[in-house]
Image 1 (cartoon, rainbow, N blue to C red):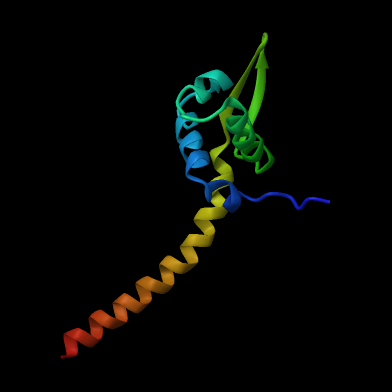
Image 2: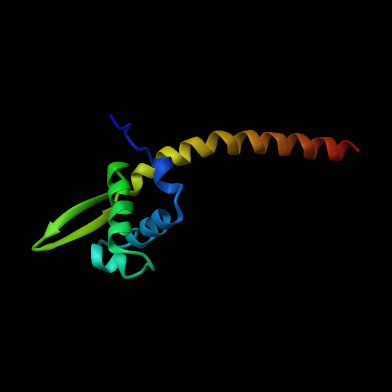
Length: 103
């Protein structure tokens, strides 16, 4: 049984990050997305499948077309994870600044 994909796996690939960026402002059909890349439509469909499994996009049918729409709230998981490290580094930099001021 395949493990559920997560948001981190989705954003690990630059093509998927670019697709998310394209969909951030508007929904696009699969052809419009595929046209932006120098790879097969089948390869783009696999990226779309992974993004869908991670909950970062949904696919809506409008007539015969399938439109992809971003669900960016799923990226909050990434923001929370990054925040813990940002706080740690800010604390270390503050301590360094205090140390340098004493010198």
